[in-house]
Length: 415
Image: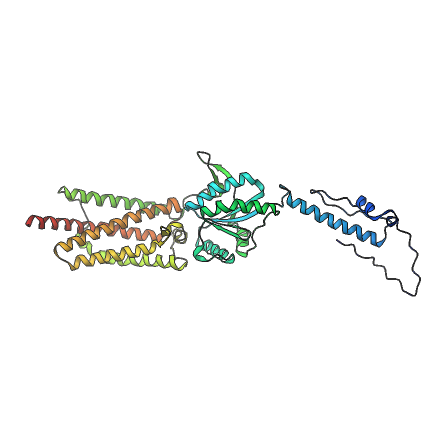
């Protein structure tokens, strides 16, 4: 900071200049006087300019220049020293419940780095639980030049670097942190969406507060806060599906022994095409939501968008589950048409195909329904509707399957 010049008026050139006392600092030497009067500050204190009585204008300006340079040097040294509060690497990590790759980073990578660097590393966690939060991730990724098709969780942002996945993050993050600390730290990325997440308390700092059995560290922010919305309904549907599956298999097993268990009346078979059309409508809508990245209309319970944005919304990370459901319902509808249009042995094979398709559909729906309340920690009302439809189709296909087996036995006996 340079001192301001004196505010007294400039003497007129025609008037003689007032006589000034000689500057004793100029006579004794400026460096000695300045370094004695303006000490270099330490890293924990800031120098205070010392007045120089009897100094001339040039000496006062030089002293102020040295004061400014010494203060700047102190700040640079403070930013380079660990534990002084300036050399800190800060970043964001986006993650999601039910994501196994997120678990690897949160349980295996971050705890080790926090033990190594302590307060020098500050990672803010952003959990993706709603479609709005997922959209925020896409906006942030786009701002850093990451195309939408390459966005996934876990996603780490350190400065201008974006790392994704449980392989790239542990491979490159330690090196980035080390280099950033040597350069004096790394502030939070400047981004409007990230700033909004911080202001709205959607981001929480990573801390190790809970120790799991076996000594494995778990971030406190990952602790579950009670059951999700629609939890009881999801568990009820899950139990009903399991009971229907076991009952159907028991009915088939007893039929081989000559004893027929109670089954839905044969007239109820007329509901199969209507159920398949309803299933196609639900699966088609879910496929549309998954492929077009639009928010779903979820209904009064659960959070369909959280389920649809989870890693389990696609099969093997390639095929959206909604498309698989749509293909399954179309196949069941075609199998039913095959039954109605054929006679004899072909009709029997059509009945076996229908039962096999509904079996697979029910098993897959059972798996997806289990994931919602216990792994993803979110319930999709549309998904539960599809599971109920598939359960009814399975129960209605049992009679058709048993008739196909009986017709085959009759034809074998006649031969």
